[in-house]
Image 1 (cartoon, rainbow, N blue to C red):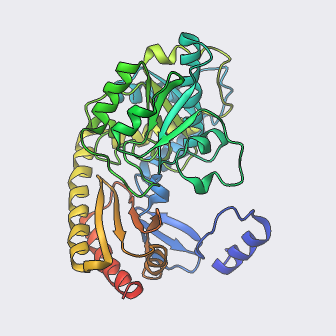
Image 2 (tube, rainbow, N blue to C red):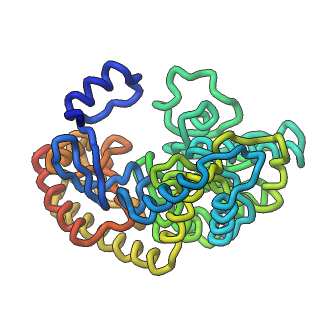
Length: 401
């Protein structure tokens, strides 16, 4: 017998560690952009599990991949090869222009691997004194101790000191500050192509080309955290491709597994070679089930026609938000983002608007205090956006009179 929403919440309060402040919603079914709670109320999901369910909920290709692979092989040790893993590695490296892949289970694990690989590369070439990484204020790279150390937000670091040494944070998009932060101990620069958790912040258009030039000049590795932006979210296979650059390492997760735990790094050959046998590994990363799902996701998302549609619908969505922002007047600060990762900054705290949108049947979230973040499934339609906008206007006007 199915539980009610209240029964689910009561059970959670009794048995789950409260490491997250959850809304009083419990979803039991999904299809496309639609979610249903235990009582059958319908919601349109413009968050996609924080950019995870890139093809929406229960997409037929994903469901088929899970079902078919589960009848064949779910897991084997990483002492052995498996077919979905090598097929996905080939697809990702070919579409990115990088050379080698390593598979993990999450974005935090992927970023841990990227940090370790950068330090191993630098240690092998330059010795033990060159281990520092420069990251950005406002960045978010994960919840493990190393990725918390890398993250440029004080709120995620509290009570976990001492943190891992060797991380320096500079303002995002500020090339002068970045250049001045480089020392003889620096081995890599680690940045998000577009900050999601930091408030959907887009850097100046010439920022990343100049960062890449700086890395070349100083013999530094360039690591790009594409956990949220990777695999079509910005209208390109990878967000770095908007800038005409080639990073040494990128990290992926979220859309890669479509809801099945998965993560990866991609690296250039000369860098990847420093992960020698025994230097890094994971037990479940690269398991056949997750790899089959990733392969199904990527075969759809990395199709140029699909990517072109993302760019078109992203432009439409951003245009509708910009019109709304103008109509809201002083209640709205502005709109920013790229593709289908968009933010509407309000003049007040955004959290209450999120709760009001839930009451109106829409799932969005707030980040950086005053920013409403939209990361819908990449299959979102103009008609669904047209349902969101008037509800959003009413919600903002209700909460911010």
